[in-house]
Image 1 (cartoon, rainbow, N blue to C red):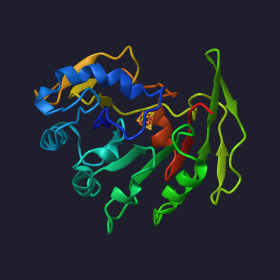
Image 2: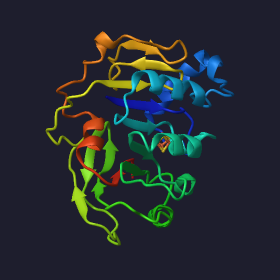
Image 3: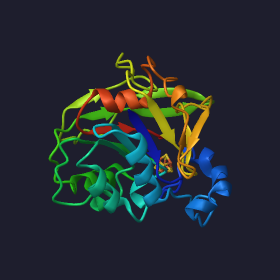
Image 4: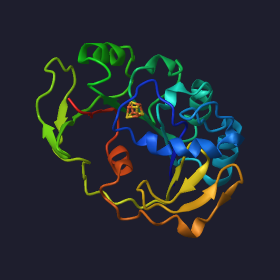
Length: 245
Ligand code: SF4
């Protein structure tokens, strides 16, 4: 089981290409999770834990994403509760890595850190990620994109002061040719459970209602270009470079 939790549609950045924007209209339906503003929809911690207990067997991969997952007030508590029981992938902009609790065995945890060049300089970004006392082996995945008249171009030109091995990638979404063999589900910040990450996804449950249509969990199997394959097929730390230069 791979379960992606969009903990919130909020973020401390405002990237104009952010897909979490498309979750903003979910906020209107978020009264159960106590949202406070249009970009302030946050999944409820107790509800998450109950749902995982019921539907995600130990050893499942739990992806924590957003918005920026480290902005939710219970982030440290959630990490302490999940890390011993699950494989964890955290998708983050890397600006709040100090919120990762200390003294935890992160050997089953992976970070996917994205640099957004319009939001933060390389120097500041680099300083942020240097704060981690990495217990992980580090891999950088470089993916810098420019957009001209809607055309996306990958630029293989990146800061040179990189202390880790570099894997260059020249596609919009890397395809490692690894089909997913596990059921996938994507929980949006309003608690709706989706069958797939794409806009074609069907709603197959609701964590606030404790529902899941398990017969529709197989929609993404054999998809090899899904971002979760990317997270799931290479261990350790990834740095994805995204954004308009
Ligand atoms: S850092 Fe990520 S979540 Fe935050 S605004 Fe940018 S794309 Fe969206």
